[in-house]
Length: 404
Image 1 (cartoon, rainbow, N blue to C red):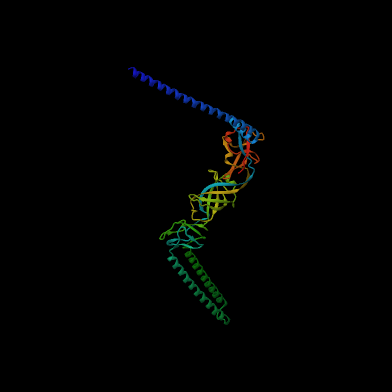
Image 2: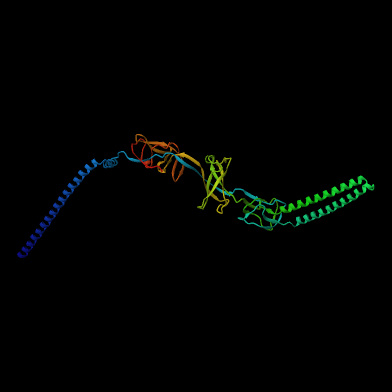
């Protein structure tokens, strides 16, 4: 029992001795770490001392350090400013409207009408002036014309007979067989026969003209837009339009514009027309400006003529960009223009580098920027961006940026 106890005690002493050694090693490591930390702090202090000395020698570095310190401490912020100047800004008016034929011509029956025998054209077909579009049955009118032609021959025969009788009477009047009164009667008979010939000829001409009017003809060269007649149909002058055609194939856009925009448009200015659903645009010109304004909508029409193209279909919808001249105005990026319940405004930097609010009136907005129609002369220093973080009267450090 005593040996085991002694062995146990010996083991216990050995374990205690190992714990002390581990503790010594840990203390040694801690001392090394503390020494390294002291060395590191000394190095940082040296770097700060030398760095501060260099920044004092370098004005640019000192300025940067001051700016950083100012930014960290809430001091005067730096803002980019722009001096826009003035330049020519093209004024563009956007509009939408309906495509139509510039001269939409309804074609109907000019004569007495009848049954349609043939229809010779289809929508989308080009026709010339006077070309036959449809033929109406004319059997009765043809027989009447033949009858009148025969009556002319009868009248001519009577006129020849009257002339011969007059010639014989004139040869006998010198011998005393025929009185002068008889000669005069034969002259009148001859003249009346010639007159009947002319009457018959006129009647035949009228009949032929009526036959010619039975053909439905194109009044001018152009494009057939619609057809409202079929073979076998009975038509008359009261049947309405049998065909619709665009004179010369010319199209137009009836652009709806406000009264204000309409006042800035004159005939002859260029425009670009883009049909809905198409990426292709067509060049045209305003050829007529509505002389009246609709009292209900307060709008009017600007009629833009465009050459024919198969994508320009009457009745379709299209948009237009009308170039209504140019104006000399400052041009600012969109980031410089702000708005609130009082309207549009910009921030300026005055001679004391203080922020000043300036109300402006904007004009044309394009990829180049926003045209300022009033409120700026162009030589002011305008805050280019970040105006929402500024307040009127605030001091700033302006940095000149390049105008667009």
